[in-house]
Image (cartoon, rainbow, N blue to C red; front, side, top):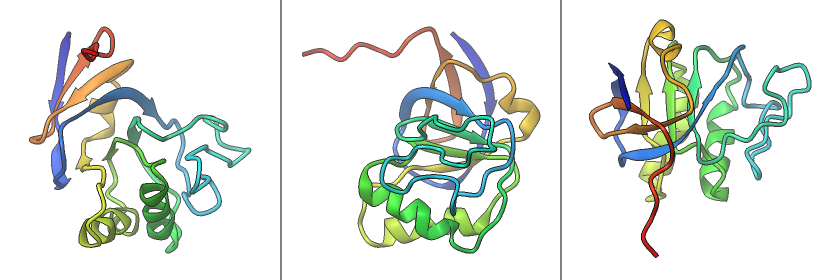
Amino acid sequence: MTDAPVASVLVPGPAVTGPILRLTEPLSFWGGVDPVTGRITDIRHPEHGQCVAGTILLVPETRGSSSSSSIMLELIRAGAAPAALVLDRVDAILVLGILVAREMGLAHPPAYRLPRAAMAEIAGIAALDRQGRITCLDALPEHPT
């Protein structure tokens, strides 16, 4: 296990563990992510076809659309949202979707801010606690049956 820097909390939420999905280029959630499945649908995006659902989504930068908040809210309602959202450049519109979900009483992913350089240290599977501490893991922990 290795520790990465601590991310700043933007929207608090539960501690999460999951696979890391680091976007390598900016993404517009409006038209770039299927709000029902969580799949990246922008055919020009390097991560096209990958799914954000259940991931710790590292987003160095977004391509804005004022409709990104509605896509995030639909992802949350559909159960296809990331487990956590980690941004370098804070996209207030995207985070607004999480805040609306919280106000509606929906389970929502926490959101954090972490500089892009620190994101480069994070890979594979990670645990993210409520204070923003990120621990890279060798594998997902096993759940007792």
